[in-house]
Image (cartoon, rainbow, N blue to C red; front, side, top):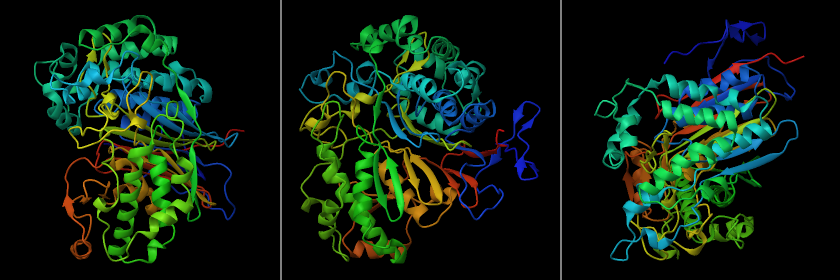
Length: 581
């Protein structure tokens, strides 16, 4: 990937070369005029996303006069074209927004919802047991998509440019094509048996009768036409009219039970972000139907009693794992869609008094067996998600996490639309009290009901200190929350965004009762000490999640970003801008 580097002109960057914006690699902080006072506005914009084409699309929209919210629509829609294994117009999104003018934060919930005809019995086999193929693959696995409504809402209520302009990069790439990359190929290989069930899917991903290979150019004219309909007609271009008719027809032909009203009645929901403090940082994060914010608050409240920087490595990991264990146990029982579950004990779970109670059961030299803590396995959530983070010159922020659930979602493309549908229904507890294929036991809070949104782990987050603003988030299914929590700890340790997203991962989720490690995540000495405390450790080479983080240092008035190196096609870029008169 070629990275164009900025040319300094005094204290500012030359913004344009011809008609093309100049972008900077943001793996390290870009210098700007130093100041002892705290800057009121950033010196430009920074975007970190999972694909460089999406990052560049967002920065070009800002160069055309858009703000961070316009850029968010450009980035999200472009990711939906170039990263179909992780997100898209057939999926759902969470947006955490900060309005620099008013200072207000809002959480935009564009999560998928269950269709009106849904019944838990639809997901059972002839033996009365949960049929995992119905839950994960094809028409029954798909929820009503929210992504398109989210893009329209963010553009209409927060953006500055016309929706057509925000969607133009995605439309151009869908029509003209982009080079296929290794992660697309490997994840298609994992799902190709399912994808091959539907001719409209194989026509896109096996255009010559065989799967696309690295560097093949993927063109999606039907998807471009669907995006154009959305650009021309707003919500109606997707949720009503010809596109909606084709989606409903395709779903029902494949065994689903959707109606035109399911699409026409989809609504974006606005939620109050969950907020708490950790060691001088003000954290703003995702509320239900995400379980992420509640779990983050519980874990970090527990850990706040210790100065982790002063602890030896083994003790630090031990305490972090014990906090993870307790939070993951709790998220199973209590959390769901707040429009359906009215008695969630969020205030108690996120209180310091509750953290004190949880902390009291942690021994400093011994692991707590999960079997000694009453509970159940955490709910399964898909691993194939994506995240991006944006700050603009006006002090607007966007942290957004997007998903189609598992790799390539349901595998079903609605013929004539290019829309690859999610398999988000598997995130519900489809059979209460009965373990699914992942060993997960479901409960009433996350039971499937018409119009309900499934519980999620997606955790877009802001971190605010007196002199810094940090935005971060991750993919990774149930590991999203621990990835973000350890990202918060990394920034508290003083690391840069690139250092934070590069750190090796470790994770514990109550059950299975083991610390899961990336290769070489911990030293041999730390591993030996943890085993002596009673821990089981296992090394996993599977997907851990891909993080994207950006930072505005208000003291030096500099912007920096980090894009996870586990994903070579991602990027973090800074675009410095001259203030408008």
